[in-house]
Amino acid sequence: MLEVRLTIGEFINKASLSAPGAEKNTSHSATMYFAEVLAKNFALPGDSVMSFSISVIISTFDCPKRLDLVLLGFEHQTVKDFQIIVADYGATEETLQALTEFKQHTSKSVLHVSHSEEGFHKPSVLNQAILQADGEYLIFTDGMSIPRKDFVEAHMKMARTGRFLSGGRSRLPPCCAVEISRDDVSSGSAFNLFWLLTKGYPDTADKSRLLSKGLWARFLNFINFRKNKWYCHNSSGWKTDILSVNGFDERMQSMEGMDWEMGYRLKNSGIKVKSVRYTAACIQLFYDALYYKHGAKENNDAIREETTKTKKRYTRFGILKS
Image (cartoon, rainbow, N blue to C red; front, side):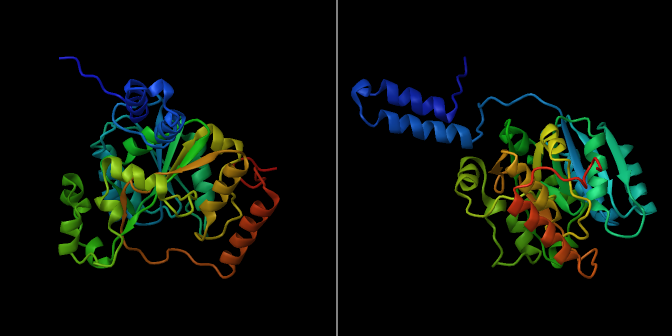
């Protein structure tokens, strides 16, 4: 039996054209506009997907046990063919051991870039990872955010020329984080809301990212009211676009908004942003502040404010120094 699969835009188009009197229907143009909007904002089964190579860049800071769970999550993705780069800005022997063990059990290409000096070097290490990435398309996350099995697929399906993707995370309290085992990640139990509730996941927490799937999740992406920023725990974009703005600004001295600033420059360059907050799901394990420097937040705020006010597209303190 021949299976015919239509995109949502094609379906509405076909339905409106086949309706009695469609050629005289004054609402036809509005229907087609609605179809066009849906086709642009919803990636559904049957939609065409661009063909491109992918690198996943995972930033980490001395959290080998959590990194192990994150790597395991990427081993169980529905999409199998992608490179993994661990951008390590707090290199330790334990992290190297976790990577060595993972490499022994995976067929994926795995690279390790690191910076072992004291201080905040996350922007610098991420820039190294960008340069060494083989993929045309780069997905960014961190060593505390375990991806759901369709995480890479969700980014891949929504990737389009001229835009980057902005996702979110479901933060787990300590009581849940300590309960998650390798088996829970492999089986998918770690993303089962009812399982999490039995482990102490608070009733007041936002559960929509874990419950929403399929068309409903894509609809929530479409009506998302939050500001779509570049987040290093869940964002993606084309390597050429990131290189064109010279990557991350290495003057950033702490976590506070250091990733947003590059997103602002991408937007200033004309790159659009789309939400994958409800389709590219990940759970973030609880962590304390990993690095603090007096005056760092004010420094980061000043750099972001300058980028916003001047509509700056390129930083002289990124991948290339000038």
